[in-house]
Image: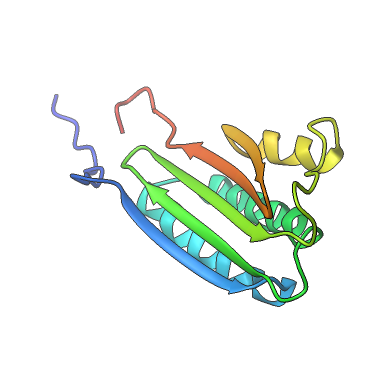
Length: 141
């Protein structure tokens, strides 16, 4: 018996999308929409796409709390064929700003909604990196 499996998009190199918006919650919808569109390319389920949208919203809210007055929020989306990595960064109001503790509720949300979550603070830039991998299904699809 032959089973037809829908083709999975393949990419020779990683696809990278860069979006920069003012550091304001008003623009989070743009970032959530980009997240959903890119996750759909990897054939994530609707629930997985919604989880990623929530994670991006939460990460950006964390960064917004640290942002300098006139800062921009930059998101780098990397699609490599099996995963989507989102790196959200903002220029902070103070050098080496403290990101939320891994014990905080907000961080627990990020960890639950993604496969990997990490932070980096260097000088006046704070970054949160989220990665979600495409699930492997037993039927090979």
